[in-house]
Length: 212
Image (tube, rainbow, N blue to C red; front, side):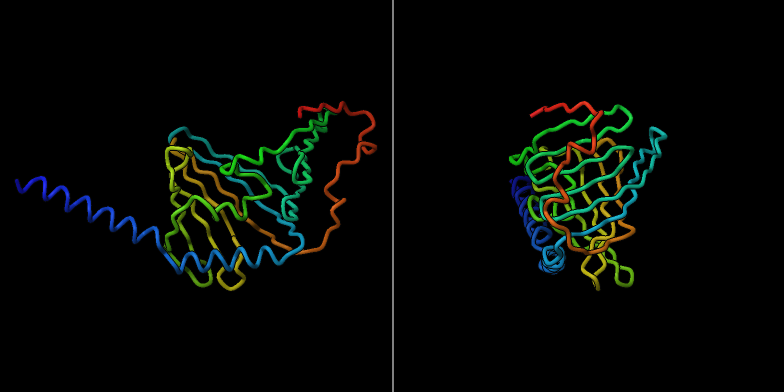
């Protein structure tokens, strides 16, 4: 009869350990400061590098991009494509095809990683863990609370603790694919809301396709 008691003890230890990991007040405090700093900015211009790799498949790819954010609104230039969003709709401008596609943002999908939320995607649905630190750079590991609902194992944030800014976001996929966004330039600024409104007169020869 000792075996069942041993199993129960082991399970209790694992649950206690998990609870301790899921309650990292120092990591939460740092992430709260990052959110506070980001919220205080009217708009942010980000020059970033995107990297994708899967060593088992021999895949290595990278591309540069530029993103301007203002709350839920954004302008994105990435991989030969331009997008703008007013927080409700997205205009995707395909210059090579002379086409503009209009779509709606799925506001009910809280797990969607979009340009407007990727700096603050950590605020819900994760367990925080402090990892390694080098100088002013701190790694925080995010473990999804509901791993069966996502296609990745974890996300690592590299944070400048002096500036309270995210320097990189790295996602570890369940299929061994790793994707990373490295933020090379992070500049606060001020922009009017009409900077995120699509001006159809600038694209007179483009086909406008409304997918809403």
